[in-house]
Image (cartoon, rainbow, N blue to C red; front, side):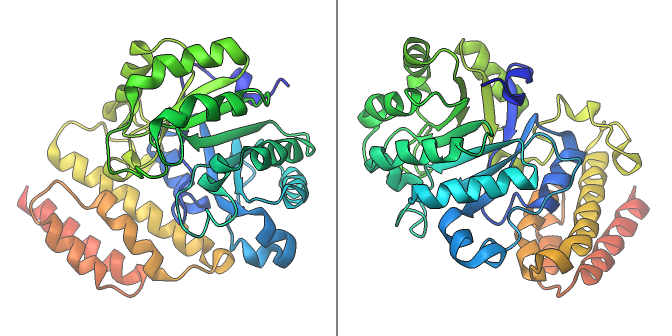
Length: 337
């Protein structure tokens, strides 16, 4: 089917779905820093929603109307539940459905995630069920469950399902992120896609730091359509921007980056924006302040005193406390320049 996927620039860039990270707050932060072409939600469990409703997915599908294209990332092992849940996602206005078939977390592999690599019949049924909602269906997976040489049979099964996009984290479930991504297999995977399902877009994921790195990989491996970045955003929230100097996303971040000091000020501005969004959405998401602390390392880094500032922020109990400390540091740094 023709969908937004077909209209994306190539190569396109995607923010990876990450549990307790890529909620409506952080997606807007990344958009301001330098937006990718596609956003994914956090993982939302189909069976949980069918049996317990929205409280089971705890705000994972909360979005704004201006987020487009936004893909709902879902997981589960019951095709009937997948069918009901994808229809719910369609009613909510998502641009597409992505089925997670690669998550290695113990909670996921009981019935979905990477467990589907070992249950291809269930994977096929889940894809068919998801398609009933009328949205474009894509899959995110890994090379295999235990060994790398599982990749050909597993990816063949997925490519035979006429999905719009296949994202491959270039490691196995067993490898987690403990070894380097298997870039040496990219060309063979492209050839497999071309032979079985040339209409299916191919996105690579794993150890990709930023846009420049992704562009270099695409240039080295013709046939790759998209690049997904996950952990790279923790090293650099501006990783999707064409270059740091080109980021002009509102008055707070409009100053071109030319010095170490301005890099720090840019990150401070983005952190303040994150704090403001957290406060705005907290009543609806209901997430405690402690969940925000995992993000401080993204912004507070690479300058003298960064560790001390992070330590202070980790002992705060509210966004107001955090703002006060950041303001004090900002004033001190400005005075020393």
